[in-house]
View 1 (cartoon, helix red, strand yellow):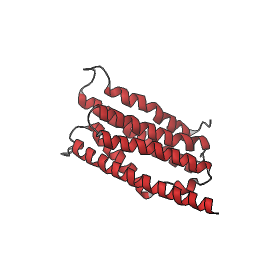
View 2 (tube, helix red, strand yellow):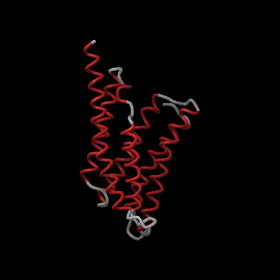
View 3 (cartoon, one colour):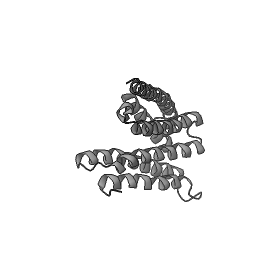
View 4 (tube, helix red, strand yellow):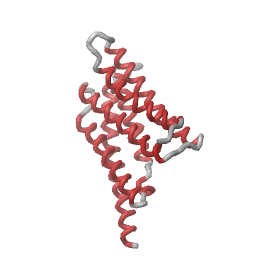
Length: 191
């Protein structure tokens, strides 16, 4: 296991997950609801920033590693899954959209692993639709965590609609990745 700044940030992101979850399950009365929402949103935002920062620093400082390449997406998926499970439990997120997003993350991770073993990992590289999905998903989660009106916006309405959009983009990107994998594997068996 390589210890460097990017990997440390990834471990920090993983460490923030139980803190972020625990905030919502503190005994009643310990913190006002708005404070709970604000703290959880800040922790999730911090984790999201470390996601961008660890990748940037790994490339910038030339500290990329196989371990970091493995751990970073695992941390991302754990963070998103934990947030969606909490949001469903709090009745802030729809079950169907959350299951679609979590299920796709597991399926595409498995597909990427399989394609990497077949030497075809470039065939399932991140696409624009995947990046758009991630943006909609992260914004939705932040809005749903915050929960309270913000600058006159109904964060729950906007967050749920963005999560539904993210679920749609999730399916679209999943089919895109499956199609790319199919074409790559079909071409490999033909040669």
